Amino acid sequence: MKDNPTVSVHGLTKRYGDRTVVDGLDLDLPEGVVGGFVGPNGAGKTTTMAMLLGLVRPSAGSGTVLGAPIEDPAAYLPRVGAMVESPAFYPALSGRENLRMFATVGRHPEERVPALLDVVGLGDRGDDRYRTYSLGMKQRLGIAAALLGDPALLILDEPANGLDPQGVHEMRGLIGSLAHRGRTVLVSSHDLSELEQICDWLVMIEAGRLVYQGPASDFVSTTEHGFGVVPEHDRDIDTLAGVLASAGFGVDVEAEGDRGGFSVREGGHRSSCALRGICRYAVRIA
Ligand code: ATP
Image (tube, rainbow, N blue to C red; front, side, top):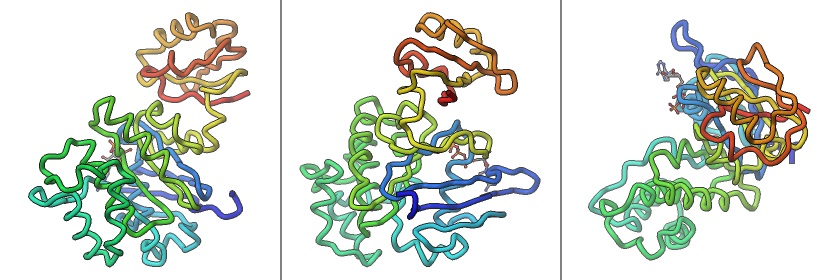
C-alpha cells in the first residue's frame, strides 16, 4: 500500500504575507485508506486541502497526488472529488435533479445518480426538494456530488461540522464505507473522536505543522503501554491530570515540559473515552 501512495507531498508550505499558515508539511496518504486529517480550528487543514485541490497555490513544497506532480493539478484533478464547502445546490430542485445537473456540467454519466443517492442514504428522499433537506442530508448530497466522477481520491473538509449527534453518526457510517476498490478518502475534522473510529490513517496538524502521521491503530485508543497527551486548552492541565489519575493512569505520570502535557506510562485500560473533550491529541510513544 505504501509503495503506491495517493498523496506524497513534502515541505508543503503556505505563507500569507509574513504569516506561515502551513509550515513544511510532509503528507503521505497510502492508497485505499480513510485518512483522518485532524487539528484545531485554524490549524491549516482547509488551506492544505485547497493546495491539494489546486485552489490555493503553495508557497513551497513538492510531491505527487495520484502520481502526478502537485505543481500540475490539471493532471490529477479529473480523478479527485471534493467537498470543501457546501456545494451550491438549487433549493427548488430535488436532490436527484441537482445531481443530474452536476453530472451534466461535469460531464459525468447521469446513470450513476440513482446509485449514488442510495450510497449516501438519500434513496427515498431523492425526489424531495433540496430546501426541505436537513443539514446532514445536504452534506450527504454534497458527498454524492463529489462521487459523480467515481474519484480515486475523495477530499471532504469537515463534513460533520454543525451536525447533531445522529447526523454525525450517519456521516461516520457513510465516510467509513467510501474507501473501496482503491479509492482513498481524506476527511478533516477538529474533533479526533469524530474520526478515530472510522479512519485507518491519521494526519494531525497544529499551527500548520505535523504533529502525528501514521496508522490510526497506533493511537491512544488502542495503546496499553504509554502515550503523550496534551490538553486542548492549557488551563485544563490540572483537570487532565485528575482525569488521568481517576481513569487508572496515575501509575507514572511524567510532566512533558515542552508540549505542556504529560507522558503517561503503564496505563490500565482503554482511555480515549475519558480523554475525549479535553485532549488535543494523544499519541503512542512507547
Ligand atoms: P477551521 O477548522 O477553522 O476551518 P483550518 O484548520 O481549516 O481551520 P484554515 O482555514 O486552513 O484552518 O486556516 C489556517 C490559517 O490560515 C487561519 O489562521 C486563517 O485565518 C489563515 N488563512 C486562511 N486563508 C487565508 C487567506 N486567504 N489570507 C490570510 N490568511 C488566511
